[in-house]
Image 1 (cartoon, rainbow, N blue to C red):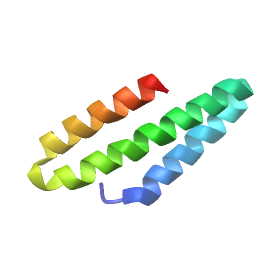
Image 2 (cartoon, rainbow, N blue to C red):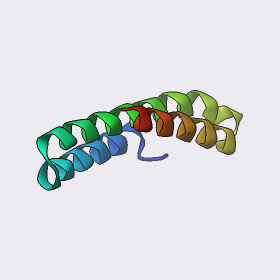
Image 3 (tube, rainbow, N blue to C red):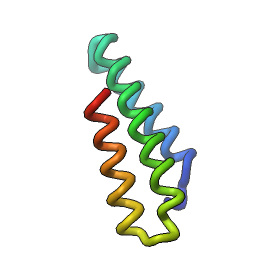
Image 4 (cartoon, one colour):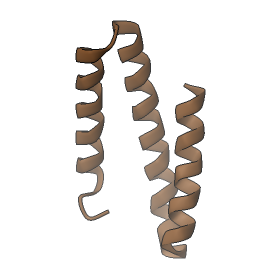
Length: 72
């Protein structure tokens, strides 16, 4: 939480780079898109809910991120 958005962007970049090295181009694109979308939605849900409590924010943001990752 302290590292914020910079850490999230770094994680997406590392995940994308690993996908490009280890997977086919099609899978790398899909993986990067899914990861970027799910993490973006995760943060978008987490930040406004954080003031309601950590458990509420984490549960809701993880549910949204998981759903987005699965659908992409």
